[in-house]
Length: 281
Image 1 (cartoon, rainbow, N blue to C red):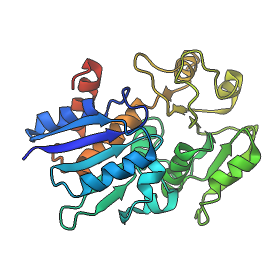
Image 2: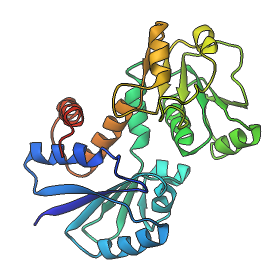
Image 3: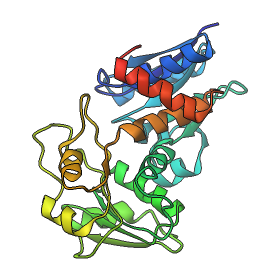
């Protein structure tokens, strides 16, 4: 029986998830495929999920904006990250009882990606631009890795404080909120905003600040061709920088492993990278 997978979002036509997962299915010889589904509204998605939950052929789902909070609120077995963050991107049908297993692989995806720039992350200092769900996911990942300091920068101080309010027990990690970075050196600056999706977008902060105060830059945004303006500008100034493409690959590989992939992680990265570069489905 063919297993049906889907990536769910509004809009969804830009998603690389079908490219990634169908390449993995082909490599492993699985009778499975992934399609992209735009339900249009939360109400329609809720209706579809009820239908899919009772259908053994409909197996699992990758979830993107704006439905990650909705998925996190479903009844089922939630991972620790989902319980704390209130957002999920991976929904797996539990064949034993027809309920859901709910995960957030963005945490592992970010950790894997940023370690390409900086490893280990323990005792390091970070500044995170952004106060939304992506920023919270990154803060959670950095706390889990034992970061020394995380400064969260938002356009409004109250939004930054709201962003970090869920992190009550941070262990050794010191969390600071502000509307501008402190005048000190950070091991890594992270853009967790959507700035950069367009080539004309402004930088999250004047480039002179990056030159003076950061050692590495990670941009969660990625572009279909080339890289982001922020990453290009940093590299021109010999600041090591990566965009979000590796995070995308890493979180999808975590999903694939949850869904039964047995190929080694190193080989999966090669499969995914080649598939995305060639645009195969």
